[in-house]
Length: 120
Image (cartoon, rainbow, N blue to C red):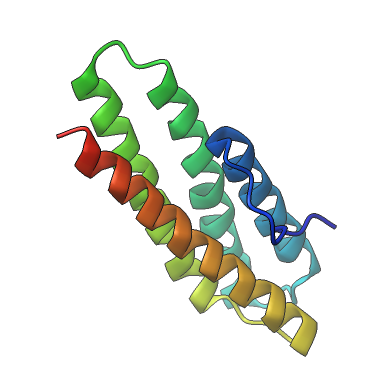
């Protein structure tokens, strides 16, 4: 099982990778209800997209391209938090892991928002 650690990596590529892995680990352990199946698909997509877009941002061809891709990272992190709030959990450990991931999505949203502001 992949967990978000208390000591957050400063390397955002690694941090976003760990976030996506932790979301996948949680998703694999959740009940497969009809609602959860669709919600889990969405949260896996959005959580993986955070890191993928950050990698793209780091390869940007211009400052404007970088800013656009970081805005997408922020949007995907925020969306991940939304889907995590919707997913159904069936135990206290799952709820604790979900809340930790919601907190990480919120932190990533703020980090990418700060980066966007600094690129203006």
